[in-house]
Length: 140
Length: 140
Length: 140
Length: 140
Image (cartoon, rainbow over all chains, first blue to last red; front, side):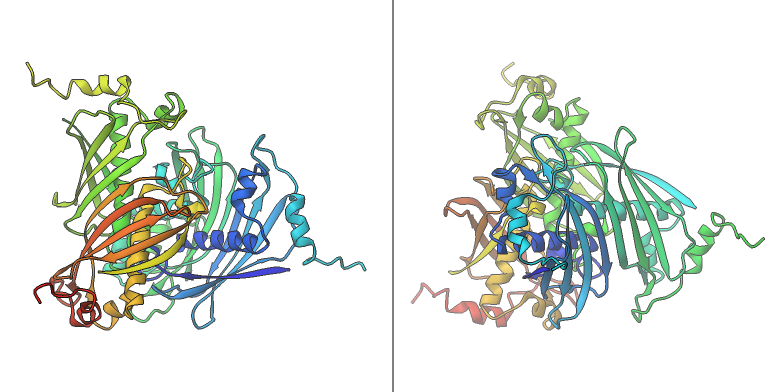
């Protein structure tokens, strides 16, 4: 398991008429979480696209809204890779508010796609190598 | 079951660097779909908030991304209520592209909340009455 | 002068904590207005990019906020080309609410850019031809 | 004159099909800039609304797009109050890219409005006191 925290301030732009963060804007938080997790591993998604010609379109999202996110709160975006990636990489995302309450939970699955032929590929070695230390083989 | 179709043109604002609709913007399409479904029943969400003091925060989203939505395509947002609402109302959402291909599927669950005490309430009668004809009782 | 009207329903996604449309979301309305104005002339911006390899990045925006746009209102986006385009095309945008009050005014200037060499170019003939009837020559 | 810098990472959500930040998303950067400028002065906009019942709707925006903002770049949002506020407060906003090039310039004017009667009011003392040291009287 690999985990990464990143803080995010709720902006007026994020809020809606109900006074809280609009439910659709959490997807941006998941994005920030997984990009910053990768950066923490020494990788940028920009390089994946530009240098390795690999993109990561989203395949599915499952999200549970527990408590509202309030204007100007500084949230914690906690992102985890809990399962060794295959052709799919799953990011678990937990959002915590300033009182450390869990306000939101999501799982986002993305697929590795070669930008040259638009075909699905396995998790590339340069990422697997960075992650392998975090997923010990249980057989031993 | 009650179903409603609404068309949506993909805007430049919706697209991202990959050239397709950003994965987070589908939530706006679900919103448009369920609001227009309600309008088709003779209800507006604005009235629910203003006149009945009931709001509908989102409790969960499950989404599956099948094919990309391209710039300037005129999509169909197909929204369904397949299960009689209780304290929760579930909207099924299917997005079709111009070639009638299913590109996206989602289920969004919302809860009825009284704006006066922020407590969960059952589906209000004015909505249940509109829907009841579409959900036949199986007991008979 | 060439003018075009298009209707737009204010969504929950557009609103902010103040209860009105977020000031940053008007830019999407300008985009919808100018794209639909072009469509009314028989042109799509998609074709401009895909077939003619011309893009139209925004050079400047001047906007005046007069009255708020309320949730669920059906606005009119009125878009005008008041000056014959050169290397720059200026779209005037007026937003009217359901009571036909002018709530917002903006001018958006865009430049014609060749996608192949990223250089500025004059307004292409296929657009100028469509517009020429609307701009009478004053010399006569 | 009072000035404040804040960094902002361009997200996939911010980009559009052209590969750069969508022109409408700069408004969020202006918002971040002015809110963080106020925080640097020891004020939060949240308190202004909640404790002082004053809101700051936007009256006008003038923006000039100079160079594109690229995905994953860490921008600097430089925000300035150059003129002592009256009933109106003007924020100058300059966006710089990673090479310290000026890519965008804007002026955003907002009005002080009492939330209780929706009327325009002069700049409140608690803000004027914080700013007064930065605007020396020229008469002396």
